[in-house]
Amino acid sequence: MREISTKIQDYWNRRSQDFSAVRRKELASSDAAAWQSYIMSYLPHGRQLQILDIGTGPGFLAILMARLGHHVTAIDSSTGMITEARRNAAENQVSIDFRTGDAQVLPFPSDAFDVVLSRNLTWNLPDAGAAYRDWHRVLRDGGLLLNFDSDYGPVRFTSTVADEKNIHHDLDSALIEECELLKDALSISHECRPVWDMYRLMEIGFTDCRCCEDIRPIVHTSPAMQYDSAPLFCLSARKKGLAQCAY
Image 1 (tube, helix red, strand yellow):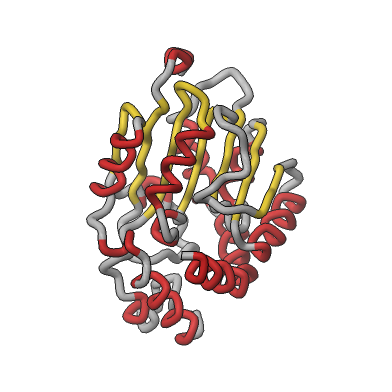
Image 2 (cartoon, rainbow, N blue to C red):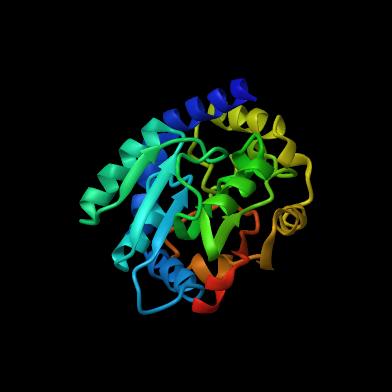
């Protein structure tokens, strides 16, 4: 598992600059407001929240939450992504605690956060089940998990290169093939998602588990942006506890 984790980190280090350019474009588009509004519909109002953005990449969700005045900590295993995220946060004049670390074994104490966010990460983890358990651990009682992801297992990235409307169209074919090989080596690629995720969350002890199977019509509003063709699902769940009533 360590070997493939290292390969994944190396891959996203090499992709960090071009991926960051896409996210900066997204931050400047109408999609940023759409994402912010969608996430706000899940959050309690009237107080500053302790939010953890896991797999932050170039910092897109972290920046949106910091703009709302929340205290945001963001983590990514790729040092290149964290460098890009710090740059993007500075350009957007927001303060975020960015750290390099493992999404499956978080370097935070238990019961530390009100909200855990993640976007397009779990498909890329060697052990997503272990990650979900640790995300549950760092949430406070009543805390909220929001995970945005896609079922990339059956998707052939190499077949998207010829599609000019696809985000992968301009990428080097060798990078696409490498991503394909890494994806296929992960056990989560062979699960039926998001059904698998819902079962894992309930087994761990999350409550109020819900799934919106495709939120692309809600958060992909800008004609200037390109994305892949896979449905983007939203998983929401809470850590059971007395503090749940505060939401």
